Length: 382
Image 1 (cartoon, rainbow, N blue to C red):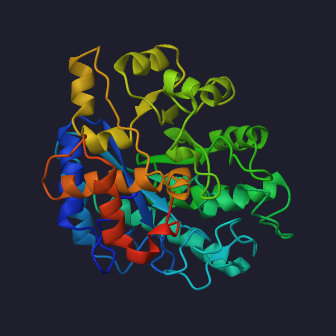
Image 2 (image 1 turned 90 degrees about the horizontal axis):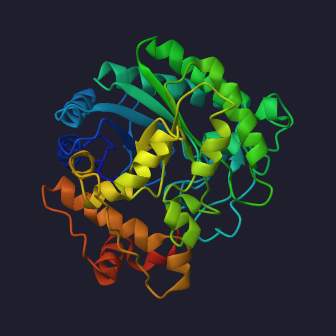
């Protein structure tokens, strides 16, 4: 999730700290932040937090302390959007290759291909962000390699059509991820948690398929990661938002559990499945079967910030989530209503207000309009 609670210079705000304090007090064992960008020249959203040498490190220390106030560990998710930077933020976004996002011309400008030195500079930016995260009190970092952002773009045969050492074969397409993880580990040393969030597939023709994803994940054992979080999808195919999941998926709750079951016999790194968990019984079933080492919860925490405590106290507990439909196919298809409904709940938590689980479609549409105005039909993120 992307909290959208940075200030005008992309530093953490008191509202961001209050949000994470609320989640920590709710019983979360590990809190993984939303996108923290490693370059202020490449944002996914205007109110993204950025961690680089220009950042207000005291603001980051306050954020980390708030997130740990209830006993949680806090890991910073570090990211670069690549070409998934909206046109009102990036005139010419960068990517492995100069290939535009299909069907999204109204929202994203065509990218240019990165030069080799620029690739090295971005890898260093990831390492700097990780070093500063440790310096300011965070317990770990998660490198975001999913959802069509820059690392995911390098891994994808659809989006990476380079003919140098950074593209072509799977080994070359993995190079950016491997070098980033190596440099991050060098920057933070041992004893600092390191994780990745990565796609099981891109769910788009020509994109990363399951067999290649499996090979990529097997290659990560060499980096001694603490956990790997399984996800899927891109801006072109935003299945991670699951605006309209199949009934069979809803019933089994965990969206990516089948891939985790396949993967657990192939790698030694513990897996985390996030997406779809609603009932304590399904969580316990996944843990007992060894399908996941941890339960990942995202959107339900926006509505029930004390969900972990509730789950521990009541084995029959189930989080009831409202299904939203605007009646406008473009909005519903791209999960925009879901995004803004949850962003409104996040904003309320950051302001110290209670969430509104019964809030309806009109409140989300009004929140969208206030934030985007006439541009509300342009895709912003997924």
